[in-house]
Image 1 (spheres, rainbow, N blue to C red):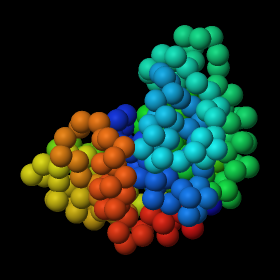
Image 2 (cartoon, one colour):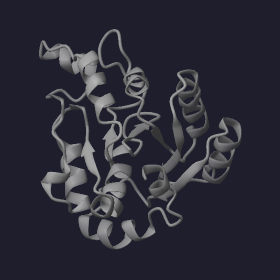
Image 3 (tube, one colour):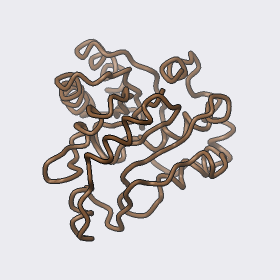
Image 4 (cartoon, rainbow, N blue to C red):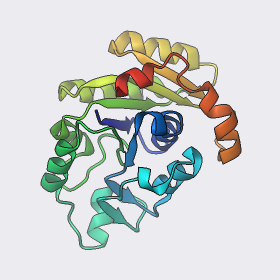
Length: 221
């Protein structure tokens, strides 16, 4: 089945998580990568492609792509284009049973248009969701608010995956978030810094450490 990768905000780690999933399971499970709406350059798709080492055939083209790096509703307005969320919703619904990793744009409450939020598109698609969440100070509030929004819309939230540079609050953050939300943790991926990960390190170190208990794999299959 398809799986949506969403996040509590921008730059939390959706693209890194997508890269890890594709790099670890792309070939063996026949996964595809799809980012329906891209703002700014095509860096997310290219990043996943470069890190995972997969052929371009594993990557579906963006449905919409806008030059301005900002919220989709605003980026599209700058180009005089309105995102057809009805059409996009129908397309996503039609691929929900295929093995596709669908990366959302920005945080879940980012608007796609002046009328539709990203989270509403996910709800309409009926594609299950993995939430990428931060691990440092502030993670509790951001994550619990996002989970509440997800649960209020009865979206099938499979679990939370925690990524980022840890600090002294990290261990308790994860415990508190899972206890209060009732949503399981699907794993953690800690970074030493926010520096860009090289493809060599990603292939040798990151993929080896990712999903040791195959919790993500069980969600996908």
